[in-house]
Length: 424
Ligand code: HAM
Image 1 (cartoon, rainbow, N blue to C red):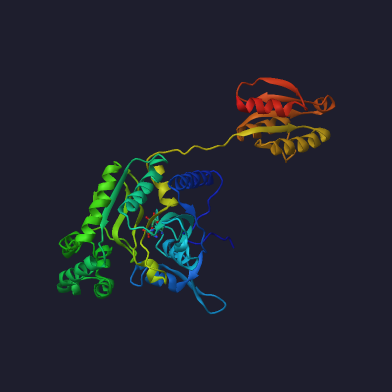
Image 2: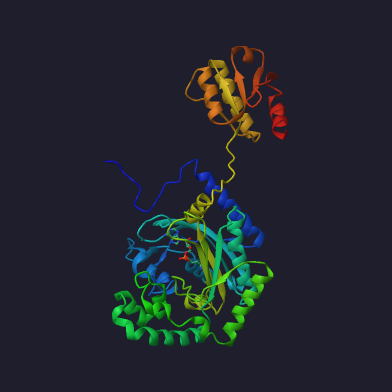
């Protein structure tokens, strides 16, 4: 029986993996410049962490988690996102006690959600995310938004839209919640069964419903921005003030509701506006989550962050026709014909690699012409040719593949010669 990878997962093969590596390196470099340090947390956690962290009423917790009992009878879950794990680790390792605050962390790794696979939506996807814990300065919100935009811009994307909203603090949210209940209750029977439950448990989630999106009551729903108290309104004003100061374009969308329960104050998403991007246009999202550290058992600590998936980032690059640079060429390929030259080639390849060159040779005992073809396919800049005559005279024939120029170099000097050519 032929075996395929599970639905909603993919293999990333040579030829494509170079794009992933380039993106990962760019994001790590950006993290370094913004002074975010890497954190690596387990791929599975106690199920309760996500129930409490992400929120019981979210689609993620209700429908999408890969949850199973381990052999010890404990319920564990493959992480559907990174924030809850980072916060758990922040509390467990008492990172709040360190001298330098806020604690600024980044992560990159696979996440798992049992969703219906479609373009831009897979069951295993790789998220890159950052979290800043320990400051309630609106300038940190602006820093995170700036980071998110730069992540795309530095990779060459330009058809981007940043959408921001404020979900307010607890007091504002409670006032809004009451208004939502009053607004939707007369229509309760017309809403989907999930929304009927949402209306009781977390009415904000109704605004995020895919099924009831076109219900007339959605368009007239009370806006959170009308319910922000003084502190929340001022906070949002300051975030926007800093974005303006950094020349970051954005749109305010009072209907932006994120799919996770921990958000308050700033919430944002970045959309791709590239033609042909596909049905799901959200590239990344994030926001503030003051209160989450406390919910997970730590001291009251504000936090904010965002995450993007590399899968959707690659889709955006493709839609905008951006080609990432690839370092494909070999420094040299060694062509050897005959027993003694073969042995010399094995030694030479090893030596050149130790000296830092990217080198390969034939392992299929092909004829000279076929070895040259392989060198061509591998984009070798130089081909070193070893035959019996060369070995006898301690020589190697060096061919420049771009110019076709060929010269004999002593085996002793070949290293220096290649290095010189590499520098040129
Ligand atoms: P999220 O909006 O659930 O937020 O996911 C963030 C990003 O992950 C999405 O914008 C999308 O790029 C990607 N993503 C989510 N699900 C899939 C999927 N099935 N296939 C491909 N890509 C996907 C969070 O996860 C929050 N933890 C973000 C955050 C960090 N908030 C504060 N800090």
